[in-house]
Image (tube, rainbow, N blue to C red):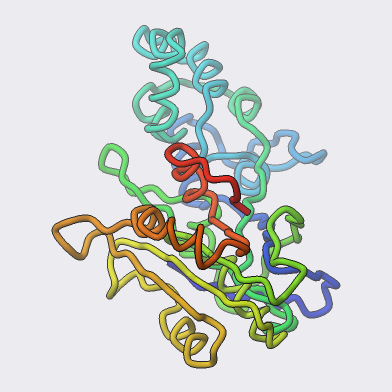
Length: 313
């Protein structure tokens, strides 16, 4: 996990608790070089990208999606690869979906070599899109800064280390005092109650706790009377207790009135965030009948599948 602090001085950007920050990033230069080597393309070959004529290496670095595979890419690439196995994968939608989810674009090129021109390869790719991260700070507390809580996506595919596009950018390539292009994505459906006396219940796992740090910071800055209850889960207490000392200080200062934590890998019987939440459903219905219940996206999906309570956000 990376805690990222970005200076917004002079940007005229403003945000509220619950908003997200959009981040534009560059792909990994090593990944760009690997792909061009696999395709036998000269990095200086010029193509059209973003309304400009650019060397293909520069275009792949900043204008095209290289870390998220798609069915359209696999189907398009299969027309150049002339490989029966890849043709069978592309023809079966169920198999194709599984293949796309488990195989990065570079993995496709390694497994099914083909020769394409720079223009042909670029034509198979989607434009590079920004990633949205829940803001983990309140501007009332952070001032000209915005904070993010970023989990670095890392995995291995066929013996080769891979990383997420934006999370790898933050974790491995963005240096301290470096610059990054950002924008604020408003989320008016995910807010603190207008009445600061109203209690809130916040349920999140992993980096899904990020917006709740912003919520409690805002309530502390306003000296709000409403009670705040946090339910948070992660695999390990020692390594994964995000913002531990801050939650402890909020509790000491009277702005975190109740908290429940679940560590899914620290005991023989798994203790998970959704289990903790389920075990507290009577409390939601009784002691917190008038509370605003807020969940991170991952937790909301898990709850909705199983319980479908009447109030979520």
